Length: 303
Image 1 (tube, helix red, strand yellow):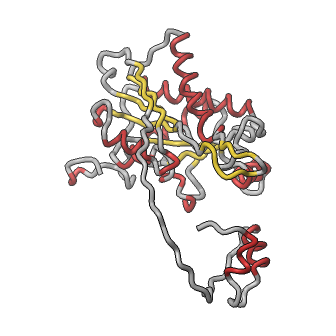
Image 2: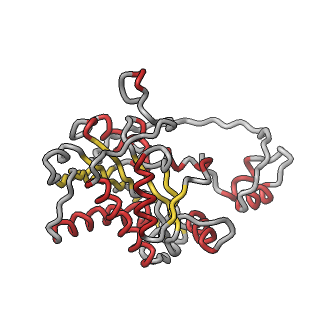
Image 3: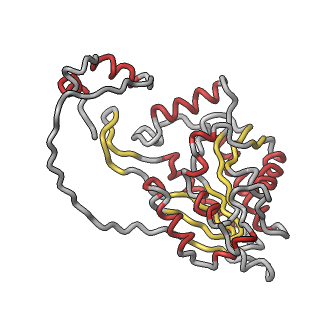
């Protein structure tokens, strides 16, 4: 339920609470009190249902190796955003520049660069622009339930989301980095570029479960996603937190925001090299035994 700030005092009248103090505490993201409201409300609700169509957009680059071309590396980003909505600072267009239009563009650029260079990879590559990520990973969940190739032939998913190139790239947080050998490959590629990779140090935020790599992990396909990393108390952390406070899922995630384009380009190179390394490796990525996502032999199928 949404309530205008100037209506709060009337709603909680008689509860012994200070509406202005509650609003101020909420603005500072402090803990708010729990209390009974001595009032009754009668609501009449009208429910309207509509059916929408929002397809995934997929493309495939065939592999060049006779033995490996029937294996597929998925590289993915999500194409949906929030469109028009509640105005913030007079702007009601939720552009979604870094979440996630920039990385749909990166998929397109990678395809164009491969074509221009007349370059093929040993394994086939599925370029996936998933829909419905912001509504609960709907597009990627549908894809893993209705894959366009046999699910057993999906060898990896490299997901492009949650990336905020706001400061120099020397560190990447990699989601599920210790679950599969994709993490080892990513560490090797990053090391060659002066980029350190480490596991998520804020698992309570649930970032592993909030992006399109998660449905792949759930069906037993090795997957990985990345976040520009920072150390506590640094300027990089300040910029990262500021982005979430003022731009995340707001109109201000637009082309006017401060972006470190050198860092963005460095990540793009990392992504290119990682995709090529996975696609050309003799062995397909595998789960590590300690991973909670690893398929259990006793189950007889992927868990």
